[in-house]
Amino acid sequence: MEPDSSTVPKNTLTDILFVLFLRLIAIACFWLGLQYWAMLVGYSLGGHARFDLLALPWKVAGAGLAVVFPVAALGLWLTVSWGPVMWVLAAGGQGLMYGVWPEIFGSNPLIMILHACVAVIYCLFRVLLWQEKRRRRQQQVMVDLP
Image (tube, rainbow, N blue to C red; front, top):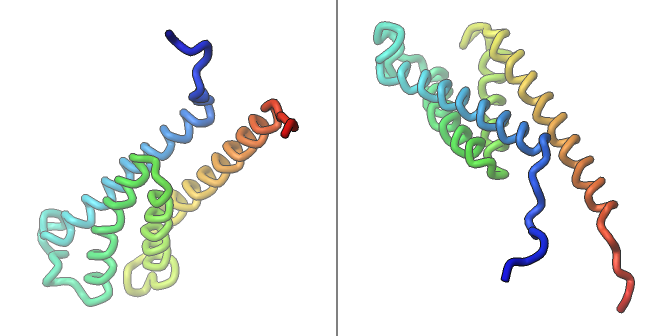
């Protein structure tokens, strides 16, 4: 015998768009991770940015971001709670590189703007999802019987 109604709530449009947004950012993070790996192993930039040829700040930043970006991509793709945290670490690392120490790493305002836009859109999604959850909770029937 089948139950009358499903106990699993249906995903709203906001839920679906949020997952799509996270997966698009995951693809971008994976691409950035691949770019750092290509740089470190000498595949890109004509081999001039291989790990053994880099200055110490670039070695630290490049190796760190080559690991953190793919891990963030995995977490974002799976939509687990640690995915956005790893993205914040990766974006913060690039923010420090290009915003605080541009004399060492150069300037890249485009990546800074893109990370800021992603952060703002993520916060907007979280607010919308919180409002939907609150609205759903208010619509539920409360039973006050002991």
